[in-house]
Image 1 (cartoon, rainbow, N blue to C red):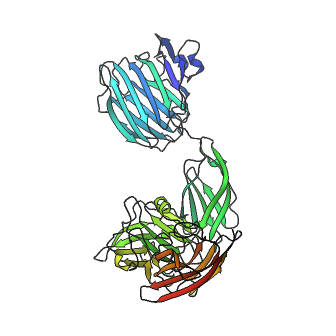
Image 2: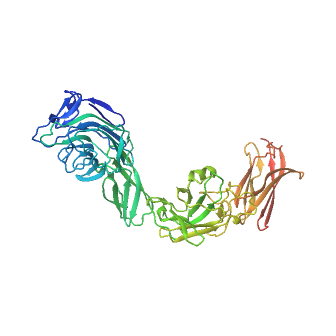
Length: 560
């Protein structure tokens, strides 16, 4: 008989008179080797025997069992095979594991689960599957990382495997032993034969547990771990803001004792999983609150994009405190006024938005940031079910956790600037945080400003100032700063020599940021460096309403 047991790999153990008992333990005296197979050879004073061997296979594993029962199974004569068990003793009231029953009164193949001695049937073949005077079986059991179980078999003269049942269960994540446990009457003590068994697992776990989520309920914080932890390994220092309440294999609980805590709070934590993978790193908890009206606003919307690019909505946390992302949802409004596709920003109570921070929402934030330059300090959420934004106009609605409206923006493509030559890929921006006016994002910013200051926003007075008016070897650029009294100015910057002849156009009819900086390196339209001398730059800008700004700037190109 060959026995393959191991994690990721299989090694081979041969049943030989002097070797097999080195691997198996238990009632080994009740078994013997016969024709390269293992046969039950028990006394008629007992009704069951069991032998076990070490096996940690349980997740993403395959068990292949071949053997025979020289009898018609019954409630007195049947086979139990513990595929995964926490104990070598099948009568242990604390045993946890998965096992097969072959036979019993229904003559079926069944998969059972035992958790601390409590039994539950997970699946079974059709009844009478094993209703033969003798049963030759070839059984394959498979499970994957998600707890999906499949059992298929060939019985007696079957040529092909048939799938007897599927089931789903992953309550038990560790195993220590594999057990053979035949049950028999006094006249059937030699009627169980085991020809071959193989056990294989593809499961690798070298990763320590991490925080999979948090739940905040009143003053209680529950930390949810990514996998079962070894409770006795947990070491925490909750500091002065929290009280440690206890832990089980999946959850650790704290009570907030410092009610005025807000922002990031770190707790030193050492922890191991049930397989011995350990880590020591701070547990970060973000104390936050639900948003109220005025705390978070809609700030930018990109609704018309090219194929392969992603829409986005930008929010801004106006408040001085951390806001719970779980307390916010984004939605659209139907023509009848009803809300549509309400999508929470997060399901994790520990996701929090710092004060005065931009928030980017998109089905694909990475795609947005590849197209546009996203701000470094922004918080982003990729929302798979974020509502689609119609190119023809719609209502974007920001909601609190009770679906009360915090902010709403009814956008329309006609809101784009008349100076905008291409609206596709161009967002609409709020002019300022305290304004309800929305305008087109500028050409200068690339058409959108996710996670950073809006191109339409300005805190400066109207001015055009040359802060670097000459070019030398040490100062390679002319630098002009500008700001406008309102957004939607279209501008042109022309260059003239000292005789008044126009020799270049640095930019023409650009939809400009409300405030910005322009740098000129002293080259003409062909990219050639102009000769040393005095030049005049003419900055002209006009708004949609016809307001005009005109400024001449004298500059010098020196030796370089």
